[in-house]
Amino acid sequence: MKCELCQKAEAETAIHRKVGAEEQELYVCKACASAGAGPEAGATPEVEQQAAEGCQAVGGVAAFPLMGMILDAAFEIVGRAAVAAGEASCPVCGITRAEYRKASRLGCPACYEAFSEELEAAILDLHRSLQHNGKTPERCQRSRQLAQLERALAEAVQAQRYEEAIALRDQLRRLGGGGAC
Amino acid sequence: MLNLESSYSLRRARLVSADDIAMTCRVRLARNLERERFPDWATGKDRERVLETVCGAVMREAGEFRVSAVAALDEQARDVLCEMHLASQDLMAREVGGGVAYAPDGSVCVMVNEEDHLRIQGFAKGLELEAAWRAADALDTALERHLPYAWTPRYGYLTACPSNVGTGLRAGAMLHLLGLRLLGEIEAVVRGLERMRLLVRGVAGEGSEAAGQIYQVSNMDTLGRDEAETVGRVKRICTEVVRQEYQARVRLVRESPLVLADCLARSLSVLQSARLMSTAEALEFLSALRLGAALGLVTRLKVADVDRLILLMQPGHLQKSLGLALTPEERDEMRAVFLRRRVASLRLKG
Picture: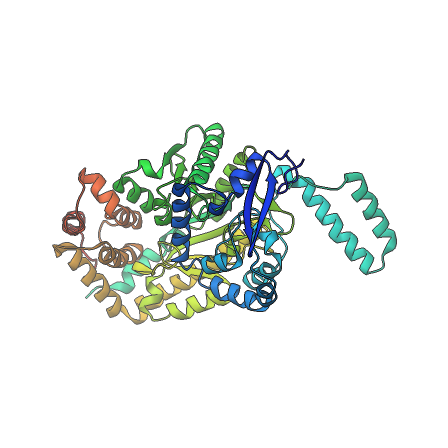
């Protein structure tokens, strides 16, 4: 069985995670178990204390002057539906919307996916852009090329430039799906 | 009374470098590892694992770097690193899993487990932001061979705070803007910079006051523009601020010579006679002396000499030079002694 978090390595262990009021059991690989197992997933008292210290440290600091205000505004809009459906949390690190809203800091890279809707609004407010145009790590070059082709394909279809769209689709097929990043 | 106009006219011909106003610059890159919690939410064990991974990569790629865990540094060593901008106060508070690696010449460094897993910084003098960028970029490219950075095609480098996501790049320069302050024009300049979406902070970074009228000006946006564009834009705008400060200094000499002379004379007198001197106070008086040196109005004093005093009078360097651990009160006394000796022979021209 594949790891339920990264979907790559073989699952070796089970972790328990609270999602809202519900307790979930996830079968995960060793790496995800050590990265994703929060204090609630059976950590030792020492680890729990360290985690609590970390939370206090971020809770007391205004990380970025506008961040709190911008995140507040974004959550005010998006958060209502989430509150009705129960508190959302990141499936990898387990932090909740309320926790990272308070700290103005995310829990792990997977939070960008877990809280994508509200983050999109906050990021647009902060940077006036939603597209990275800078450096790409060597191992992620293929992912970037795929993403660029997919964007170009969507634009071509929308503008009814079908010949161009077919050429882009063929390029995408040649590259194959699923990047490393 | 000082003959400022003639002194400054002589000096002006030699005032060709922006370094008199732009003190130093740096480029910082924020990076994180895939599948690891960001440092503020990670457990001590998580952070120690990240520290080990990053230090291993640094040692493979840059064997000459000095590498140290925060826990292994005493208070004085921590102060020295912060005063050289090789580490931040936040990093020095990270007892478990915090670490720093830096080139022996201090031109580039990596902070480990500060706000992000890695904060790579390149430094350069004046407004040579491209050089600072090249230094940080080269180390980043070398480290990425060993480190699985969290990166997506849409958002680029993923960071603990969304305000850094994208390039993770902050390019900034330290600008000495006392001329604009003395003419009462600094607030308008700061407002203008903020309208252009630049961050204006004090020497110690986020949340700090611009002590000694030294301002850190850096880009706000990290998404949308690429690294070269961002660095180029910050440089262009900082060059314009340097030009405005230069013009303010010219006007100060021509239109308000008494204000300038008073500021220099008071500052030099206090530095030559005080028996107790805090760091913040010393920075204010040395800032005035720096302006005097740039305008050629103080005998035998160069801007670089004042910059050296600004570094050496700070708590870590002061205690290191004396080989003593001092209380804050003792430091103020020894700082006053140190500065009195260094400025004893200085005189204002004219």
